[in-house]
Image (cartoon, rainbow, N blue to C red; front, side):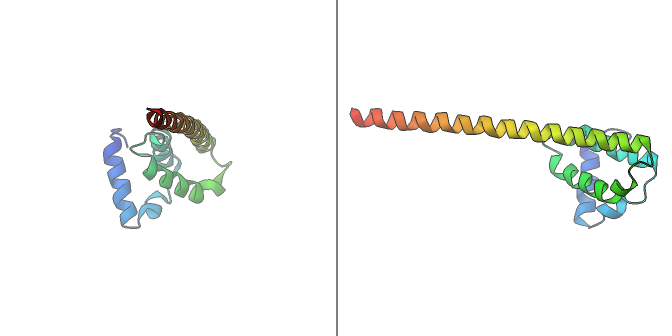
Length: 121
């Protein structure tokens, strides 16, 4: 985490997930080490290369540390940032799905009109 090499961190997360050790690895963290993993998750959760892994990390962190809300201003702030980042990404994804639907509609309409024009010839 300290070197900010996301590929290496994700590789470790992936391996821990395969070995069913991710929850154990994320448990019993103090404020400093929780800060590091939360900051990493916040920074890279919206990167498509890492999203699938970091959604699982975020879920586990919320499960483990959600009940500790209010005990650390730093950790509370990081969870708030994570929530904002996820909400923002969800909003972007919904917008992209709407645009994709509109593009699909335009393409389908163009194909239909093209087919009709071909039949007239």
